Image (cartoon, rainbow, N blue to C red; front, side):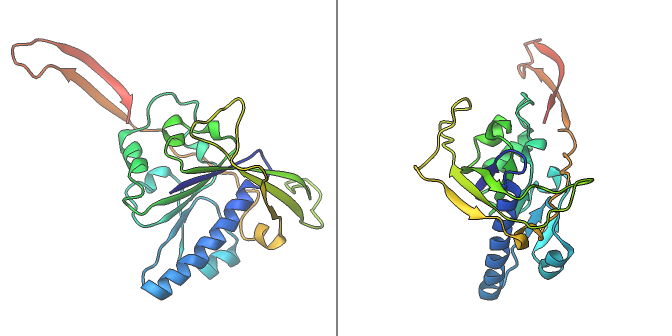
Length: 230
């Protein structure tokens, strides 16, 4: 399962992701008690010290997407996934990455991610998504930050709508249902993660040296080596 939350800056998408993480931790605790195994959450979103210490058994931080390849039976939290898989990169994804995305269900891997726009995602990743939710904040407290006055009270309302992604219309996005869902911005949800964290991108895709020639010994066809992203 691969789910993405989209929305502009300060719209509440990372907050919705943080709320989902709390649900995952609660569920994984129940599974450990009932079945005896520990399902971990690999996250590039940094949590508060208090939340991490309380749930450190279930949380692992990652910093480069290559750390995720080959994992089995985990939940992956991927804030700003388009920083790693941008639609501006036209070349196909590395074969190893594409294979991992295509076979995630077989490996028990679930991905929960965010991006400002669904079409910010590389096409190969966009095609693998199960659901996309658009998040907006019609009103609420402003966002704090460096050299900005402190926020006296954290409050607000966020609306959510599920995007139609098959097919997806970039110029005129369509939504499932008529009425949006909603959730309230609560201080305790904002305090479990670093709301000012800057998500850094992973390293560039590795290159693969490719040579093409005919296997027939009677044929002299040979194409000069090319380098492609893999």
